[in-house]
Length: 228
Image (cartoon, rainbow, N blue to C red; front, side, top):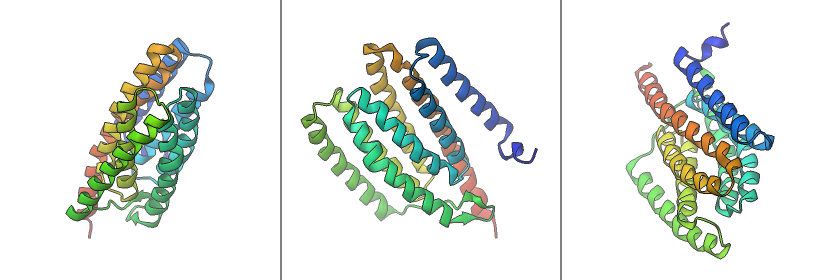
């Protein structure tokens, strides 16, 4: 019973909605590629725990990065492959270590919320701009479909992964922006193959969860700052 109370009533509703949306979309429009379904379910679990500041979130994100890299390769979205296998995966490892090594007063079930100062924000913007320009030419050379949204997916993923490792509440907003880009990418893929609609639904649900994560992390930050 105590474990069930780990999540609030609203969070349980969000969890049930997320899994129901994923399962319904999969069985109505795909029903074949169970690997896509499994990756979506893992991704939702990662976001659920990340919203609570639990290190289990980035740990599960490592598995999702591996699975999503394979799915992206199947549609030749090489930017997504490079992003998730070459950047999101190792940065999820960094995030897990960071979250685990900086517990709040609640222990390892909740990490301490970090802060990003003005000078570091400047570096993040500079690094993100560099990643954006560099990957535009890399993805162009690889003849990647839908080059503009693919490029912005890389840059928003980079910023989100960096902020996650720094334990900043704004990681959730960066991921929400990334979700919007990914929804565009997979809608375009769905036009070519309806089987990818389940992936589109996955990132739509991700967007809702990431927006809640930002709200909850802001609440966590306020609560932790008020503790002696």
